[in-house]
Every structure is written in C-alpha cells, then in structure tokens.
Image (tube, rainbow, N blue to C red; front, side, top):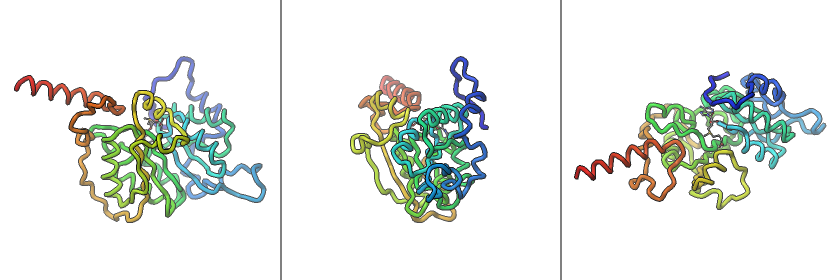
Length: 275
Ligand SMILES: C[S@@+](CC[C@H](N)C(=O)[O-])C[C@H]1O[C@@H](n2cnc3c(N)ncnc32)[C@H](O)[C@@H]1O
C-alpha cells in the first residue's frame, strides 16, 4: 500500500474498512493483467457469456462517486477504480459495495503502475477526472497527463481507446494538449463546458464541489495514433506558464492554483506601485 496523506475521520480504522469491503478490492492487481474482463465476471451473472465487453479505468478515482454512476449506467463494462491513497480505496470500495454493483472493482495503484496492471490493448477508456494538477515544475512528473505516462497508457489502450481528461483547470488542460501532441495522440473531442453539452454524464466528487464554486468542466478525449519510440519533452513544465495574462480576472481560480495566482497578483501590484 502507498503512503497515506489524507486526514482520517474520527473512529475511522482504515484496515477495518479495507477488510470489510475486501470483496471488491484487488490487492494484487498486476496478477489480473490481460484477463480483467474474464476474471471479474461473476459466475452467477450469465451462463453463456464469460466476460465483460470492455474494461475501463478510472485513474485517480477518489472516493468513487464517478465510477459508481458510470458502472450503474453500463452493466456490460467492467470499471476498475484505481487510486494511490488507501483512504480513497476504502471509500470507493464501500460505495461500490453499498450500490450492489458487480461490474466495478477497486485497485490500489499509481499512474506509473497502469502498464503493469493491464495487458496490451486491454482498456477501452482511461478516465482522468479532475487529476491533481501539481502546478510546480518540480512536481510535473507526478501529473497523470505527463508525456511518459501517456506513452505508457497507449500500450494498454485498445486500438480506438481514449484517454478522457476532465478538469476545472485551463492551465492543466493546455499543458495536457502539449503532452497529447508529443505522445502522438489525436484529439477526438474537446469542450470548454462539457456539463452543458453532456448533462447526463456521471459526476465525480470534485466536479460537484468545484462546479458549485463556479468551475466549468473542460474536457479532452484523445486517442493514440502515432506514439514516438523515443518521446522528447519540449513543453514548459510549470503550470504558471499556462496561466492567462489577466490571471483569472473573471473570478474562478482553478483548484490547487490559488497560492500561485495570489503571489503573481501581488507581484504585479507591487511592480505597478513601484512605477
Ligand atoms: C483531485 S482528486 C480527484 C478525485 C476524483 N477523480 C474526483 O474527480 O472527484 C485526485 C485523486 O487522484 C489521486 N492521485 C493523485 N496522484 C495519483 C497518482 N499518481 N496515481 C493514482 N492516483 C493519484 C489522489 O489520491 C486523489 O484521490
């Protein structure tokens, strides 16, 4: 298990929760690589069929709100919800169990594990819902949309498979566009306001929270078409370089970027005061 950073609620014993909902947690996800659709097919479901039609990954699933709705909408698709935080694993497993879903499982893991957890071409869609932006250059390699990760995702994606990024953050979205390009992906769909165009899509916890604060859902769907053998990073890695010139003067500041925006605004103000 990975290190835990989130604060636990009172009376919350993580090990107990994980034990209680262990039926839907795969603690050795690598052992399923290449056979998720068959291995997770409940024997009692259908005696003719032997597996799910598709496998989709919700990477950085948080507490599982998105995966619960998505799995309920598409019973023939197996959803694998993956997160690096044990607390999220426990909550996502609880929510899947309480919803009575048989087509969703939870796997502890990081973005860098994806190419070991799935076989080549096994995944039809990787959902990246409101991934942590890690705005600073020195943390850029932790982003789930960085070049090296996208190249790894391409190995497990089916021929027409997509990575679907949803975020409140224009700087992260614009950075991601540079990374999709460098990783040889084509953009197949994008929107600056997905919620308006697709009001019935499942909603994640962060989406709900940030939209209530004034965010729009920015979306990019991309499919790998020509992945380079030796990808070269040429994009600027600090998200500050993707900030708009007016520093979000229209009001909404993307999640995780408040500190950087305040610093820059103060710097501009001081410069103006100094003439
Ligand atoms: C901002 S939250 C979004 C959660 C959820 N997708 C949502 O939209 O509500 C980001 C999530 O990504 C997870 N995360 C961050 N870095 C990760 C990584 N490298 N691999 C897997 N999960 C990661 C965090 O633990 C957290 O649960």
